[in-house]
Length: 268
Ligand SMILES: [Fe+2]
Image (cartoon, rainbow, N blue to C red; front, side, top):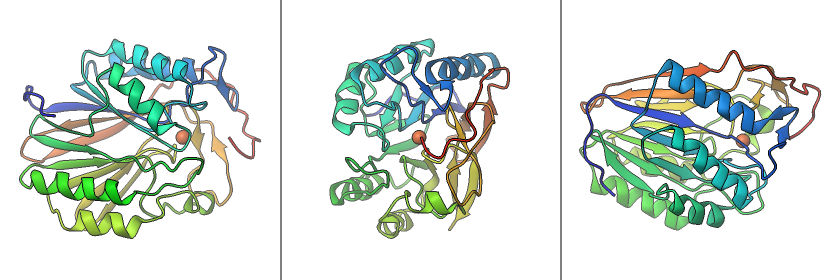
């Protein structure tokens, strides 16, 4: 799907891992995930204003309920722009896709503002780790082959590199070599963006910027060998993308959001 170019730079908001639940009381380690998402949305509007595109990079729900997906779609009505949704390990990929379609958020690739966005489903039903199926890898290769000239951002849920955290190493993208073999054939890829790790991360690989971002609810402790959380505020990532391929990005947090995180938890 192609959307008409907007004024430059293109403003792109990443929201990731909101872990919403059917119940309005739904909480993760003591943090009400509806309240934290609301605080992040307020922060976006106060700090940056309206984006031109929203990338929602998985774990949209904790309980894979239709109520939670529809709640997410309703909250995004605070923004006057399209969104693209992909699944994480806590999601039901098929249900997510069908409800995303109700909110015109099911497209797997979009050209906007001179950039090409490709959304991949790395979720594996019933598993915490991720994997890109052969059709998904073929879709990636074909999409990138169709737009060789456009600066490109590829989004998925699971981390495709080692992030220096033992417990997370077991739950990343399993077939990452196959993923990078495709990416390496397409030098127009500028950014690979993911969720899942609930933390801000920046790395470089062969000239590609690798980025991960805070969750809109709880944050995992960076560099921890075992599961651990840390009491950082929920947040989001913002991009300003030029059609030339130049861009800037930053992570912002809803620092005024008050929460009582259960830091002793051994899992989520
Ligand atoms: Fe998550």
